[in-house]
Structures are given as structure tokens and as C-alpha cells.
Image (cartoon, rainbow, N blue to C red; front, side, top):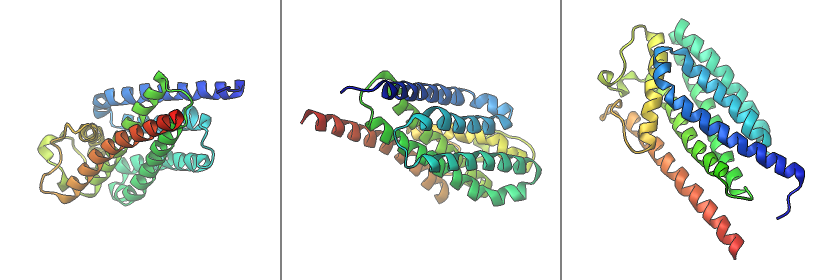
Length: 237
């Protein structure tokens, strides 16, 4: 397969985006304890991640049809994160009302990111270390989406969690923001099937979301492997 100089440039830029995304998401996971001590940090990390997706990955993707939707949802997610975080601190009642549209926009955005990531990976002309890193970054994105879901559940139904397993902070609005990093960490525990102790075992909503996060992670791996193997087999036949 002969590639033009422009195609090679876009592939290199896209692969750089894969590496940047993985490194950033790993750093984001490692910074969760710091975000626990400084609650606004998690919102900042999510906003920067949305910018990373739009600037370093989507910009050089070969998928052009959903690119405008990607940018639209990304900007909406950033705006909603700023408004929701400010409301959590200043007006918890308003934040509760904004939680549903906040989580819907973020989940739609992250779901689109994962879908585009899978489609881009199976279209890659070569399987390189950068492509593998891109696949790993998509897996971590699923965990981040799960953290958004758990945070929304905490705001809407705190009884779905075991208070003894969560950090203790004062203030209704501030506590919801401060607990978000712990819920993000719990999401990665569910994603990797290690499990978490923060969810109430007798709460059906908590168990449904836990199962959704776990199953999504396993489905991501299974679907990605199946698509890549199918593509390789088609090339060999």
C-alpha cells in the first residue's frame, strides 16, 4: 500500500494523538487522590480531556461525517461541566436539576469518542505500538464515562452508596464535588472487574450501573479484538 505524504502526515499526527490521550488518561487516574484534596481539579481534568479528544484525535481522524457532532458535543460538555460544577458549590438545588442533562451530554460525548476510536483503529493501515496505545486509551475512556454516571447517581440518589466507604466532607454541594474523584476511582474498579465497596448491594440502581460499567468494558475489548481479527482475516483471504 502506497501512501501519499499527506496521508503519512495525518497518520503520524493521529498516532501522536493516541499516545497523548493514553498518557493523559493514565495521568488523570493517578491524579485522582490529588483531585480528592482539591475538588475543582477533576472538572478541570475532564475539560482538558475533552480538548485533547478534539484537538489531537478527532482533528486527524479519517472519519469526517461525525466530526461536527464530535465538536458540538465536546463544547457542550465543557460548558455543562463549568456550569454544573459552579452550581454544585453555589446552588446545590440547581445542580441537582442540571445533573441529568450534564450526564447525558457527557456520556453521549464519551460514547461517540469510543465509537470513533474503534472505527479509526480498525481502519489503521498498520498495527503499531501507537495503535495499541490508542486501543488502551479507549478502554480508559469507558471507565471515565462510568465515573460520570456514578457521580450523577450520587447527586440524584446518595442512598445508593455506602457512606462508610466514601470520604467524609462537609457541605451538600461541596461534598458532591469532593466525592466525585472517589467515584471515578470506583468506576475503574468496576471496569476491570476488581469491584468496589462504595455501592449499596441492596440498591437496584447502583447495581444496574455497576453492571453496565463492567459489561461495557468487557464488550469494548471483545468488539475491538473481533473487528481487528476480522479485518486481518479479510486481508489474508
